[in-house]
Amino acid sequence: MIVSVGSANPVKINAVRQVFSEISDGTEFKHAEVSSGVSSQPFSDEETIRGAVNRAAASRTETGADIGIGLEGGVTETSSGFFLCSWGALSDGGLQPIIAGGARIQLPLEIGAELVKGRELGDVMDEFASRKGISKKEGAVGVFTYGAVSRTEMFVHIARLLAGRYMYEKSRQSL
Picture (cartoon, rainbow, N blue to C red):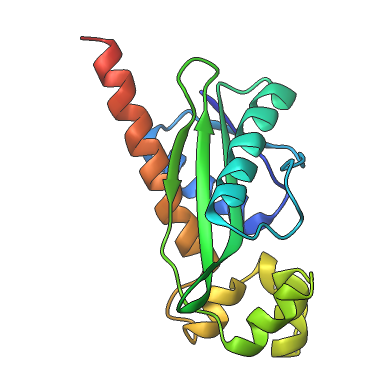
């Protein structure tokens, strides 16, 4: 089985590799930096889901993989403030895309205020934490949970949901 991730971000690649390596010994992994087809900072659940679905399909097509995985981080605004949202999609070219979401955490007001100005969360977080490359490391979730939950861990959870649902759907087809 060949599994492709629609990103060059090591956090996303490592999350998918961890999950699918546990499922199948012979899995080959590829990745492709593909367009999400949405804004660089998705700003709703719907837009973030659309980005994940687009990345999954484009990655599978571009690499010739059996399964394409798209993982997308975004922000959603609620009456309680701004929250991180993370979504994933799995495409095998046969089934409808399988979609799963991850945990959420409220962002500090000053972060939300910068996002409303049109800035990307990764850039805001690098400035806020006085570090570089947070989106390719612990992510905003790692910063705001004081390391209790990493961005990789959030995407591993989503990848597990996707893989589990995929295996469920495949088991139903063999009945």
